[in-house]
Amino acid sequence: MQEKASGKSAAVKTGFGIGSALIMAFCITIPVMLVLAAILTFTDFPDKYTTIAVFMATLTGLFITGFKAGTDNEKNGMVRGGLTGFAYMALLFLAGSILLKDFSLNQRGIIMIITGLIAGAIGGLIGTNRKIKPLNRLSSFGNRTASYKKYIK
Image 1 (tube, rainbow, N blue to C red):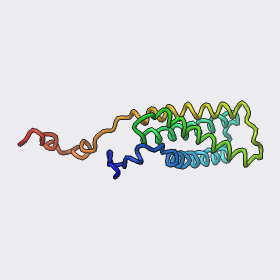
Image 2: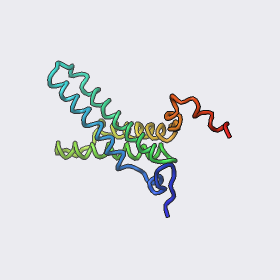
Image 3: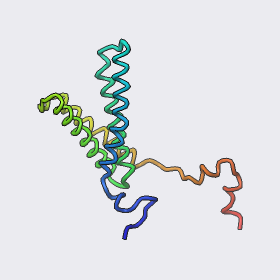
């Protein structure tokens, strides 16, 4: 029998959440990269900032990956975020290697993998330790009498 823990089953809470975190990260990273490609195509964006822009878009995806893995789990957010960041970078490395037909791991690739681990771990740490505001505060926003109900018998 599965126990319910804050709206999610206990099986989901104990899992790593890598799949859903990776899907969410790619759903954010791919449109950002498409917008960046359109900006590079239709404007005279300086070439020296292209690598930085791609790195920032990838870093955002890595952070979101770790954050999602951290929010899906109650413990070990840093470890699980680092694992999802590593999985994200491994998928990017495999996709790039298949497209370029070059499976060599150079210094830039190693730096990106380490960056993936660190950014995913930071996102997982923040995702695990975030504070959730209760929804009943939001529902009683305009209603002052709702906050005094616990004192009325």
